Image (cartoon, rainbow, N blue to C red; front, side, top):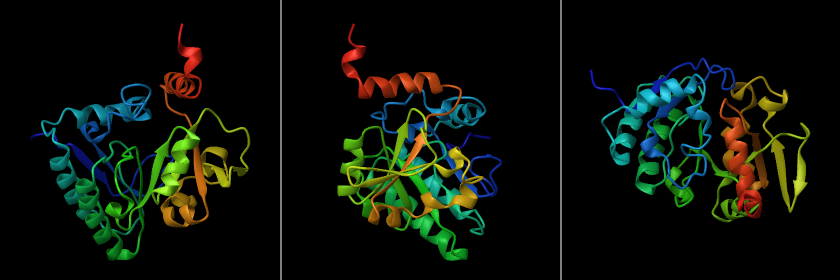
Length: 233
């Protein structure tokens, strides 16, 4: 049987997510502009890499085709649980985002459960994502500001959390991921990232500390972004 480029699970066994539904897609859907692509991505570390490698082995290599398969996988879920899209994978073009948005709308219409995700697809328009709570993934505060201007809530990767408490910075409120700081058991109980439009209106940014078995490499990448001069030698 041919390997699908997308998988969907009704109830995740991921401790960080908790008992919610989740989808994972081949990395052919990831924008190559993502600085962590093949370079410290958490999806290519530990147990997650087993799933990532399997999805990447699919013969379906066209992102649009993957989005259509992804939408059908979403439709096969019961809709009784909150849904995290793209634990692995992404979408960096508007047509694909609209396809996912329609399937996500149908998911929410079943039982009222929200759908959320993160994207390095910085060229996509917010309206293309429909009712999906989508946080734009950022590595710099300049990207956070641009995300807000474009109508997106933002998620920012950081080296580590200095404190579990929110801090103000240039008019934004930076909230360390409650699951990572112990304020919430998992995404199922937290739900902050499923409220993207509310986060955007309040200029709230979710900060995620680098994690995974490739964290060391990811931290090096983040440091090179923030301190480019120190990398020249």
